[in-house]
Amino acid sequence: MVRSHLIEKELEGFGIRLNKKPPGIIFKKKEKGGINMTHTVPLNNITFDEVKAVLHEYRIHNADITFKEDSTIDDLIDVVEGNRIYIPCVYVLNKIDQISIEELDLIYKIPNAVPISSNHEWNFDEMLEVMWEKLNLVRIYTKPKGQLPDYEQPVVMTQQKNSVEDFCNSIHKSIMDQFKCAYVWGSSVKHNPQKVGKEHILMDEDVVQIVKK
Image (cartoon, rainbow, N blue to C red; front, top):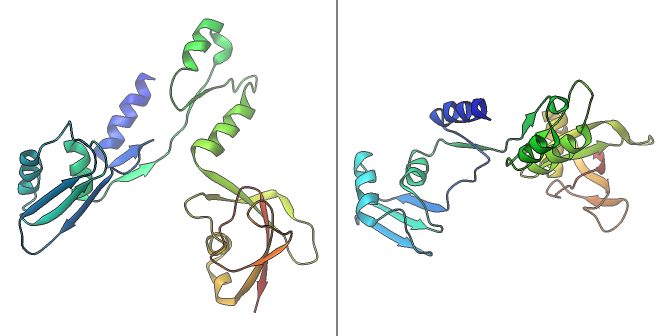
């Protein structure tokens, strides 16, 4: 995992955060009133003076800041600069056919890692399962009117953008111009099929039929 740490460090320099969530910090500039800092949890890694010093470096003298978690100076800088990207990541570790059982047990203790053997196609099922889970992906199947669902080529979406409108835009941007409603089969609805609008949130392996105006 040495190389992965080097890659992580490089990506950190470009503002990309792997397997991290945005800091629980609410930051808002204002025109006057100085620096107002509040927190809903005890802060062990940053003080008010340090917050003021960081903001002074960015020439910010008036702002409201609320800490919702025990944050660090680096967390504050990430929020102030506001250009960080947070991406889930899975490490696929190959060639497990060349190591011992004891070494494999150690690999399984590495966070966000899946051991495989591409040569023998070992552990591919677990790799796919972890990918769907860790990367927050969902598979949505299309169903043209009068036809069976297409289970061979699902539309892959993230759980953060998985509305019917997101589904339509993933296929083609022009679909929403003629969108009337959708019929959905699957775990996101109470009835199969169920008529829904563009705001409906889809779930993994739902089947969707788009109805145009």
